[in-house]
Length: 140
Image 1: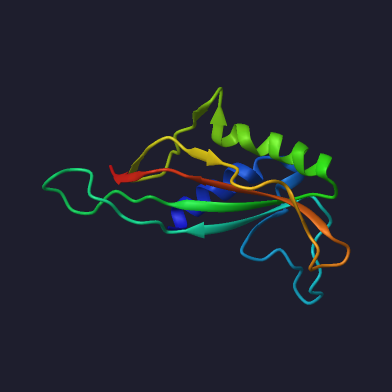
Image 2: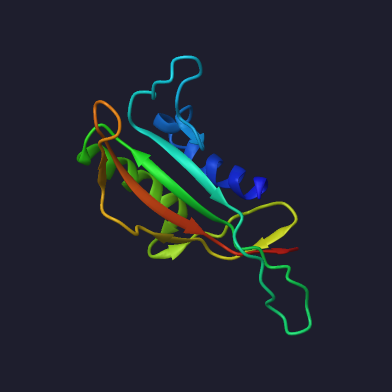
């Protein structure tokens, strides 16, 4: 799972404004408990369910998934950052194919399962977008 998460994180960190503002699980600054200034992205990796893709084969196809929280300072900021992140994973309607050492990966799928929301549990409230993405990975 780590190699898959590392690939997703590296893609997002390719955006200069997010290079040091892409986090896994926690974006709160050490010691202060506060969030960095928006925009930033939090990645929540999911190992997924391994599947059998060949009738007599082992459960060797991995299906990693990721939940991204794209946090911005306003709706417009969230939309602008999402517009920068999406082409890293989907280009012209087709998912990109991850390049991960020792694996043969399928194309990335991208979903936006809910509307842009406002987290009112923090002060000030923070607008964010939830994105789901994933792909298949077989041993090479």
